[in-house]
Structures are given as structure tokens and as C-alpha cells.
Length: 415
Image 1 (cartoon, rainbow, N blue to C red):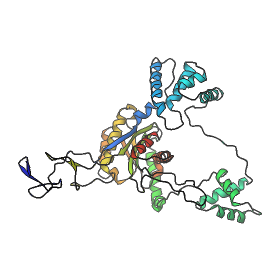
Image 2 (image 1 turned 90 degrees about the vertical axis):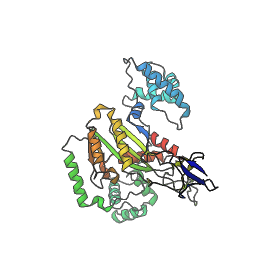
Image 3 (image 1 turned 90 degrees about the horizontal axis):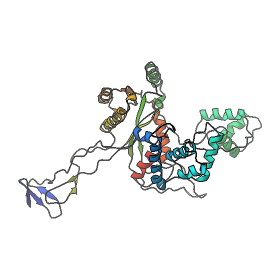
Image 4 (image 1 turned 60 degrees about the horizontal axis):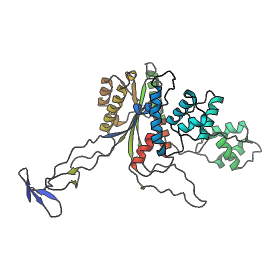
């Protein structure tokens, strides 16, 4: 038994402390922000990773390229993937076109494979429109299919009407509609994939209300109304939304020996979902934040060790809510304030409850900072380009295995 600030504290012999009323004797160590967010990337960092314009008359070019050389030398040993960074490609162009080095030497100075550098230099000479920063794709010449254009159009129309039809169903339909048709499923399946450009995907379910006549009318009226204003998706709009990620994100298919299941080992069968809040524009990524889970509070008592609270004493903040969203909006506006040309931009978001449309707090904050707030009509994700952005990011997150939350953050930032 001992006293703290005039109060009697009892210890039960098992490390638990109680006051004279039999209640746990504790003092919360510190208040934590239940709406805390951690930045993954923003427009400033995005611009830092864009190619430098190689102007030989720019007096600052030499210093800029010296900084790039330093970054390349320090980061190249840490590369995880067999790809070349924007800095390496910029450095290669600098040595090749400004310093007039040979391709092999320019490649060596940029820490690029010598043969790759020579191929780049050759293509730059032969193709003036080639962009070295674009991702290369391998094109395969395919043998012309035995099936004709009429079969192609028939199959495209068939799958437009019956998207879940199997290859056997398509063959049966071709047999019914074309005289003397006798090709096998394997041939038709290859034709569907390569010539009709139809691939098997995980289905996306749309709620019936999405295509309800009332919703379609509201969507059309929204477009007509805002098209009369200065709003332009390509020049003065910021698109905002949130999406969920977790460490178990994997491609939905995998390979295994015939007759055996494709089993993928994951860190856990049910991973914690992390909410990512994003803002993008035609200029690039404006701000990406991840919701940080609230850590368990600790209590401190004079003369005793710190310990976790045995039970929550305040309402817990489970999912992402309007507090997180408000915090994200403020950080996004802080980022936009750095670029005067963004003043007056439209911030476009959907009607999610956490966007706090009814109370008007979000609208007030955005408008008080010199921007405009626009809400999309219900069931209209196709009007928000950030939906395609999330699809691209998730595709890159799924590309290979990773094992912990920090890898998830890194993978999202790289995507």
C-alpha cells in the first residue's frame, strides 16, 4: 500500500493496482490522435521523381545531375526488381546527349547494363518518338486464326450478352448459327482470347440500383450541370476516394501440378485491412495517406512499471470515419497550398457517409481555403477516375509475395 497525491493505492500481489474504492488505479500515459494518418506519398515527392528536363543552357543542370548521380550510386544496390529508375535513365540521357559520351560509358556512369545502354542509344537514333521512360512491352507475332471476321463479331456480341458463358457454350452457339462449323473448344478458346481480345476476369458485381432509371437520370443531370461550369477533369480537378489493402492481397490464380490444388501460404488467414485515402489529379498523385491503427494505451503509476490497460476506458475507434477523412482533407489542402496554380480547383468525391456531406464541415473547410467541393451522384464510381488508379495500384501490390505491414506501405508507395 502506498500513497499517490494523497490517495491510497493498494497492490493485490499480482501487479494490479487499486484505489480505496476498489477501482483500477491508473493515469493514462498520454492522449493519442484517434484519427492519425501516415503519409505514403504526395505531389511534392512525386515531382521529385519525375524526369529532369535536360536543358544544356541551364546553369543549374550540372548540380542537379550531380545530385542524381549521388542518388543512383546510393540506391542502386538496394533495388529489389530488375528495372531501371527514372534517375538512371535521366543520367544516361545526360551523359549520352549533353556530355556526348559513348553509349557504353554513359551506361556505366548510370549503373545501367552496357548492352542495355547500347540498345537504348540505337533506338533513340532510329526512333525519334520513342520515350525512354515508357515501359517496354514484348510484341509477339501471331499466326492468323482460321476463324473469320464474322465469327469474331458474333463472339464479341455473344459475350456482351452472356459474359459468364463458357467456351463450350460459345462453340455450341457458333455451331447453331454457322453452317458446317466444327472447330474444337481449344481453337475457339484461343481465338476468343487472342483475336476477340476477351479475357477471363474476376466478375465485378454492380448493385441493381446502379443502373436504375432514376440513378441514370441523376447521373446525366449531374454531368450536364457541371459541364456548364469551368470544371475540367483534365486541368482543374482533384479526385478523392479511399480503398482497402491488406498483406494477403494476391492474384486470384496460381499454378500447381496437374491434379493438385494451388495452395498459397499467407502470413495469416485473415489479415488486418488497412484503409488508404488518396487524392490524384491529371498532374499526378496529390496525397496518399494510410490510416494508422490506434495503439493500446498504457497507464503509469508512480513507483510501478508501465502496463497496458486491461480494458478500454473510452469508446474505441474501429474503422475509418469522418475524423480520419477530415484529417486527410486538411493534409491534402496543405499540399495543394504549395502550388498557387491549384487555387480554385474542384475536389471531387462520392457520397460516402464519412465524407460528412450533411453536416457541411468538409465543404466549409475546402471552400474557406479557396477550393470547391463537388459530390458525385450516388452509385457513380465510373465518374471518378481514381477508381482506375486504385485498380492499377492493387494490381501492382499483388504482383509478388510480401510478408509484413511495412512491405505493404512500401509496395503501395512504389505502385
